[in-house]
Length: 170
Image (tube, rainbow, N blue to C red; front, side, top):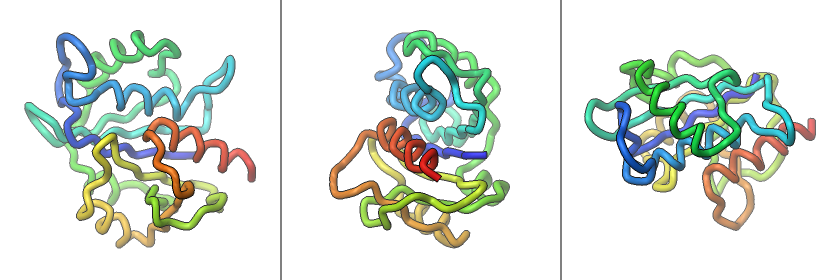
């Protein structure tokens, strides 16, 4: 099973009204979820996605997303995400990391480029602002490896697509 964890610094922790951009960049969260699951004409069965929301009004919250929660259309995914947030658990990023079992990989520009070798990889990344340094250091305590994608900067959603591609190569 492939697991992704997105740390969202400003993602709202309750259903929002209006635009996803104004809701702590929930559009980034929605795009990342879709990137983790989408294939051409199909959805991946081997992915679980967690979002750690740290925005107002009641952080932190953690949301688990499975294939059945995913909408292919971006607008529909935003609307679905509004509803899914109601089921988000009051849990911190660090609590989630402690619970999960597998090999941790932190997406980091200075990390080693290559195909992750693991049966149960857990990929950790930040939103458009990035993963806070203290949270990155926390994950490193669990023997996390830094995974790089090259010298270019990528959007989080594209980094997820690249990681899926790399994992598909094994």
